[in-house]
Length: 314
Ligand code: NAP
Image: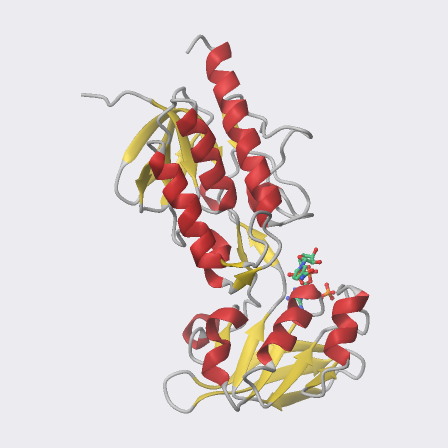
């Protein structure tokens, strides 16, 4: 027996995915949500969120995402705590969504898979992750109390993480591959005036030093981009803050991406190039990348999906 197609299948549970679910559920579309590898998304690994409207005294990221979830469930959203591995969007309708545990037919699909921290791609990176190497200061900073650490990057994230980590670390060395920064002046000035932060510029990361199993992380080998010389910056930990990559692997090339790898949507809508497939949140936004803009675009996606179903005589 073939299972009937679901009206709306939403992939991802950040602010975009859950908002799409709230709107679709209130439109009586009985949406199905796949939570993905990190249920709740990036806000679940932050601390206090000060700029989400409606919380004048701030709210902790995980608590905010739990409220999103509760609101989606209250109106009848069905959530599967599974990761979607692939989707079939081009060969037939309804679409097919394949998770780790099931295959599901969908009349419309909303892609809200977000973005993940970019890594350097150096040897032994996976082995060092969680053993001296991290891409999340708010998650792991606590483990580096009194230690000397490195932050890699030259954008706002690197400045923010470096500043945050001085709460724990005795010394933070910010390693950047150029002399110019992408960081805004205010963030850069804040880091520069922090006595615990020193800057090492024009250094390109080459290798992680130490043994993940014994002795741990001991330093970052870098190449001086001016002189070509190699050196090791000694430290007991290293945080990568070199941007994010949109999570589009599950699409397997079925939808066009822009030059930065983000999903392309028709401006002013959540429409992708395939009718019935919509995208919202960070997977299609390299510019704003805010919880509130992601939530807004999730609302757009649900309304676009509802109108599409209506136009199809649903
Ligand atoms: P970003 O602005 O893209 O900066 C990434 C940094 O990592 C760049 O300095 C880049 O170097 C470096 N980098 C990238 N790949 C590298 C590699 N393979 N090896 C060495 N270095 C590498 O990313 P972001 O800092 O995450 O910021 C993203 C967006 O979020 C920005 O719009 C930012 O303003 C915003 N944001 C805002 C706040 C805030 O206002 N509180 C906080 C965080 C982020 P190059 O410069 O040489 O390319």
